[in-house]
Image (cartoon, rainbow, N blue to C red; front, side, top):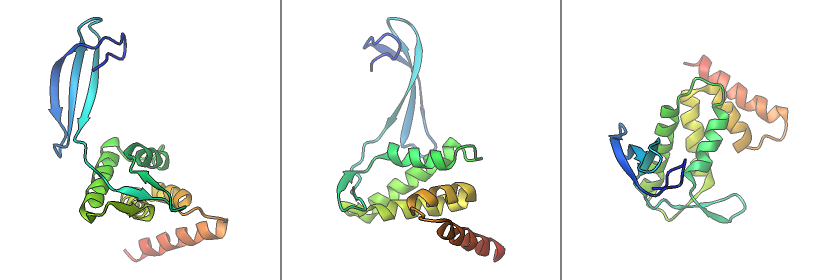
Length: 154
């Protein structure tokens, strides 16, 4: 591991902790050269399916890209990083359970929207507006009205 402060390649692990679902290990490290401390996160590398994009091209699943979209939708909302991590972990589990080597991007988008709908409705609408590429205000209003109908029936 390279120190982010001095680029020295040797360090010692001070503390290790696992996340709730035991899929992530957080390690606190200390550089043996500059003695500064930093944290690393280790995650089991799994072979997730390729993503078939809207234009029929294929790309590797990119957790950071999905997380970036979710973070943008949840900006200034009461959604914790822990909730976002849980959403991403659930998504990856769904992708693994398909057993497919390739999945359409729609599977990812719909899962994220369903999860955001339960977490924060404003984040859901923000994400949906980008994912569904609303062309005008009427499409946006249709989505809002559907959400309002759902809430009134609860």
